Image 1 (cartoon, helix red, strand yellow):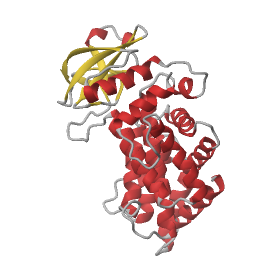
Image 2 (cartoon, rainbow, N blue to C red):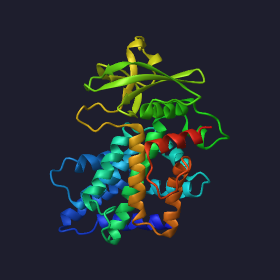
Image 3 (cartoon, rainbow, N blue to C red):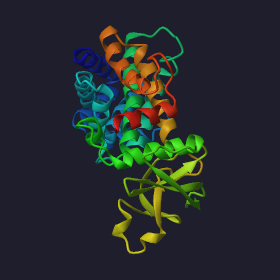
Image 4 (cartoon, rainbow, N blue to C red):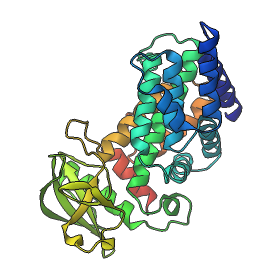
Length: 337
C-alpha cells in the first residue's frame, strides 16, 4: 500500500508541474513546488489563494498547502495510512496519528475543508458519480478521500482528552470521550447511557448570533459542557465569553471571571455551515471512503475498508452500509470500555 500511494504522489506532483505554457509560468510552478517541498505552506497560500482565476496547478498546490498547514504533508499522510493499515485497530491508529500531527495547527478542520475544496475544483464530482477516471484523476480522488477521512479523525480528536489512551492502551477509559458520546446520543433522541448523567442548562447566544442549548454531562464525577444544535452536538474548542470569541482560552480556570466563560463553538460565522460532531465525522468518513474506493487497487481497498468496518461493526452492520451519527456514537462507546 505504501509503495502504491508513494507512486501516486509522484504522479500527482508531475501533473502539477506539467502543461507549462511559458518559461515564466514554469519557473513560477517550480517555485511553488520548492515551497511545498520545504513545507513553506504559508508562502504557497499567500502566493496563490487570492488569485481571481486559479489554474488546476494552483488548486493542486493549494490543496497540498492547506493539508500541510493542517499538520500533514502528502508524504506524511502516505506514511500515516501505511502505518495504520498494519495496526490491528486500523482506524484507531489513524485517529491517534492524526491527533499527534494536527495538535499544533490553529484550524485543522478549516484547512482540511479548504484542501478538499481545491481538489474538488480540479476533479469535480468524478470521484463518486461513476465517471471513468483518468490516471491523474484517480490519484486526486485518493488524496481527496484521504483528506476527508483525515477530517473525521481530527473531529474525533476534539472530543476526547487523550485518544491515545483509548486506542493504544489496555482499555483505560477517557471520561471526556465517554461524555462526548453521551452528549451526542442525548442530542439525537434524548436518551443517556448508564455511565453518564446529562443536565440541561440554558440556551446561550454567542457573538456570532447563533443560539445553542447548553448541557452538562457528568462521567465518573467529572463534568463536561456541550452545545447542542438540533439533534447534534457542535464542535467546540476551549472556552470563551459569549460576547467575544477573542477571549477563547484552553481552560477557563485560567481566567478570573470563569463563571462567564462557556465551552466555545469553533464556528464563529453565522453564515457558515454549522460544524456538528457526528455529522462531520459520518459525512467526511463516508465521502472519503467512497472517493478512495473508486481509485483504489485491491490491496488499498482492503486497508481502507478496515476503517469503515471497524465503525459499523459496533452497530452490528456490514461494511457496505452507510455510516450514521448513531454508528459513530456506538463506535466511540465500544472503543472506550
